[in-house]
Length: 114
Length: 116
Image 1 (cartoon, each protein chain N blue to C red):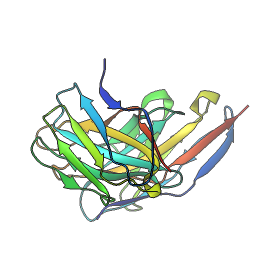
Image 2: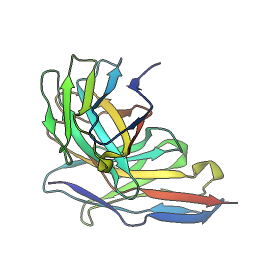
Image 3: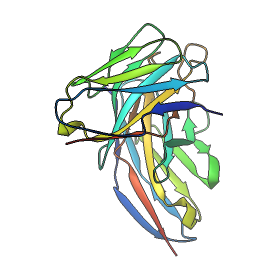
Image 4: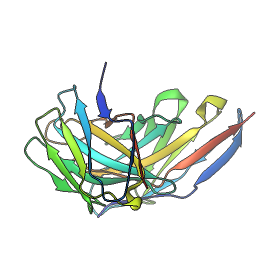
């Protein structure tokens, strides 16, 4: 069975500082990895995804993530955050079966302070 | 640009009452999902329908039933609501690409359910 662990429940950071949100996954099969963002009182939006190929994936709003198979990690990074990045971020894993189930981590709240 | 539409957006129930959450997508997606979101627990999969005519249990199916009415619609039913089912419920859909599910999961805006 697949699982996802987000290592930090809350990450406070000052505006224009870099940030890393950590995600580790567990799976015995090939996986697809995703990061989603949820702004207050909204649904989730896709930030980026890793399917195959280059381990460094770039997404929207200046975010990027690196797939590390040996460490089973998929950490999300941004070199300089803005107040508008304040939101909850979810890491998710999907296997290669045709069910399309996406298993989510517990979420990390990014709090950007002025 | 409707995408995934959920109704109702808010609902208050008493313990033991029943209700159905409706979900419809207009993107011609094959697969549809119901998640619940609780503080500190992320999103947990309740039920899913990989394709029209099929439904399967997810991580937390107890107390729920689903119906894939057609390709567009996927409803979630609480037969006898309990306070533990107080949560925000999200419907989502995605498509199959070449037999592999790699596409983006599109979410509705959520339905906030309170069971007293």
